[in-house]
Length: 318
Ligand SMILES: [Zn+2]
Image (cartoon, rainbow, N blue to C red; front, side, top):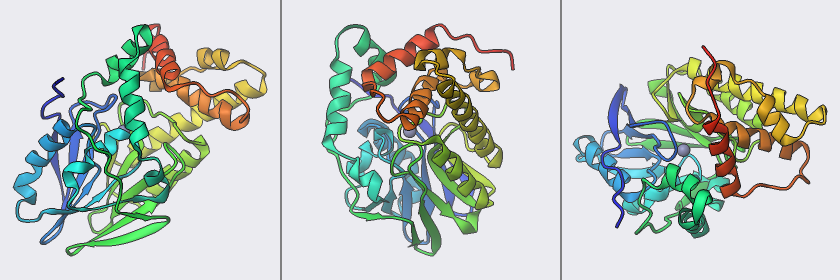
């Protein structure tokens, strides 16, 4: 059996009943999580990409959760790096949005496993990003409760508000707000230090979702990937998204091909973020929303084009 990464992150105390699990890196598959601790129970925001990572995280959290066990899990969206570990919390109530739950399926896991077995260059690109994780033994464990709009929970004395804000990064994105701590867990609406990737869109929906976060007027923002941030991290993500949307839209209306658009959009300071090749998917997303008849690339094709982009990419001076 392939051995997944051990440890994979650290538990950061944010104060006011809140913790962040911060992954060791911001790249593919290494995601953050959150822990909100009440008087006699806790709420976990997201599980991780494989069972080893999730078990290691839970072990690190045990010093806090031993007397206040995790009774609730909230999945921020339906990408595997935020819910494949759910089965280790199957005794808990698992909550997500209606749209996220609709995308949590065995076929998601099966197609990832198939991509990892793909021969040659195609498979190599996927293995480079995801080969470090161990997908053996995972049983898709979907939410036991879904909602749309807002759901307020009482985590043994701590008010926690779950708010759907998708479609943005994915169809079913939600954020988790803890008003008393002036803290929000933003899931993959925020990649800090890494390039955001738009799977669902439209990008305008994601820009609006960032506004929703800023409107909460919080001090602490826990991203889905990268270090804990504040409003400035939200504004930088928003600036990247608005830049890509406006530049790609302009290329589209000038009649430029998708490939020409990708090659011509300057990244400027955003080129310092890891995974700059996600621009490929982001431009594809803008083009598909402007012309729904455009053919969709397979996941393997997207991964290949991202890798091609990054192999020739030189970040500009910032
Ligand atoms: Zn993620």
